[in-house]
Figure 1 (spheres, helix red, strand yellow):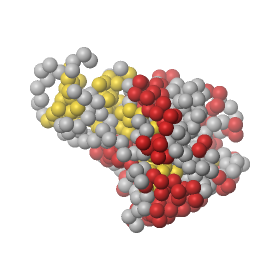
Figure 2: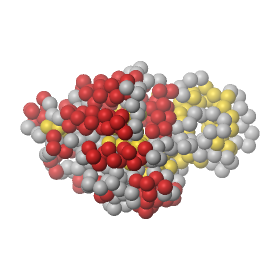
Figure 3: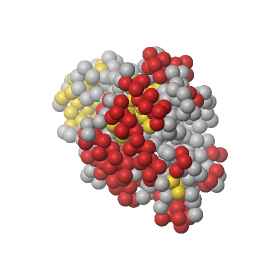
Figure 4: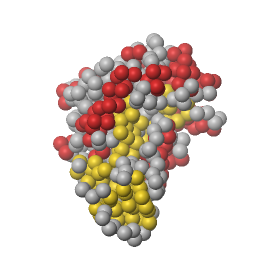
Length: 430
């Protein structure tokens, strides 16, 4: 599009009645029926749902250090294709994002890519080793303006270190995002501990390994008066702990991944390493509890935990395979399938859980805002009637380790706008 203005005509804003939306100068200029398209490029959006641009709290972009899996450029292209206008890049890179220099490098690479905003997540401890606090203040004061800190991939299992981190980030309204995994309870674990692990003879990963860390950390956060965020919550027991903590008024938030809303440990019977993930796929009962918790707000948001790996790290025997799945390009479809099409959430609820709340948790300004005059034009147009089979070869990510290959999913991102500029149009990257 060459026009300085764009008119989105006839879109169903948050799934409601059709309206026109006029975009100009990077912001929404007007919202209403029958807007004048004079001088504007027109996007016909009849039957399409218009949402604020999606925000991911949990993305692995792998750069620096593992560019064979993903780069900031390829990862943000995948994000735009999935309807995202901002992602939080996790710190487990090589070198680890535990200094102001590394987080600024990732932030600047995001600026250069231009497909979506990249907000770096800083490591909690030096080298993710859990022994010494990283440069939290320096990262917060850097150009990247870091507000989320996580050793994701590893748990901050030392209670003293966790308490100190919570105390430190409180000074600048930061949040510690915990990968809840008690390492001694998961040594050598290959999948969820339960009936299937027993039948397959694979070392089990008990739910209590997650739940015990969450219980400790919500108590620590309450004691300190700081914010804690629970990454990729995966069990019914974890839901109850978070629900209890919220009933106390404590500053606790939580996320769930799309794959934990849909897939179960029964899939591990195939021994296909694409289903090997951390935390592991759980039971059908856990999946149902997670859906209900996302619907009632106990779980605040959906986060992809997009974890790309090169072919050789997944095309091997189960025990040797890397843990993780890609998810940026399929997240919205999975949420439509599990939450919208089942009646658990409407599209306004999707906007809340996939845009407004993650932006608020990450203290990310300019995203997660309502589609209203004067607001940044970070938007996504979705065709909810579309049905298509997931083809990894068509994905923008550098990696192909999607658990949905060959599966039919609903919904398609038709267009994504970053501050009024189309990064995706007609379902294709701009």
